[in-house]
Length: 288
Image (cartoon, rainbow, N blue to C red; front, top):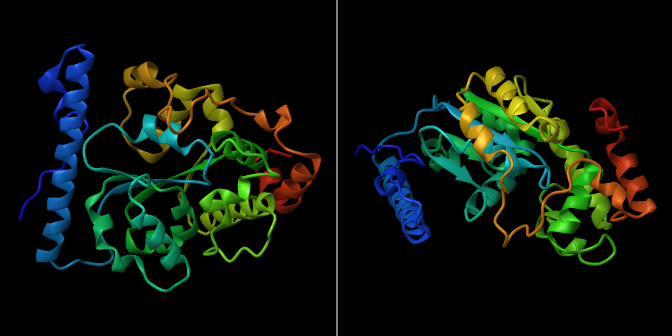
């Protein structure tokens, strides 16, 4: 069974108009077509043997949550041909990552990953060494952000404080990483450090600092694209670089950018905890 890869431009040109209603219908039609095509591609895997390691050419974007992965993936990965996979609505990738990290399964147990060309799965930062072994042709982008801003951004996005509500965020309290701290700030700081340390076991990772991205969004994306030898349209970047990456239902405010942690969201004790746990990584990347 042969399945043609979809692109985000597959359906849109068929209804090129400024009408909001037609635009919504076009987007909905495009989404439905992509879902159908994806299901057919997954089905086709049942009729062929998987060769390992896979020779699939992929781009994988990772990094600690609340680091700017959505904004950067929107500009770097949501263009071009092939299928795009993001973790929202695809929670099976969370289970896969957790299991692979704990060595209960391997990536070969999830052949579905072979049908995707571009992926944004932040937590895959924890299993990059295994991923490169299974997919040696993958190009990896790691989005890095000051861990103090990571915690502050998480609080703002979920409308919580470090004292009340931060522990209700699922990826803060997850146990699969083996983090034993009870303090949610400490747990998130250790997650940031584990992801970074795991990524440094893999060669060829393209690191993108969120702070550099905020200073020059187009230039930062083009530099990373050049390093990875992937195509990026400068004109498209200029059109989209200042648009909100997340829908209002997810983030109903404009991100503050670097240094938001200084606004009072974090207590002095929170800052001390983060700097104690993440100090080595922060010094390495110029945050201390």
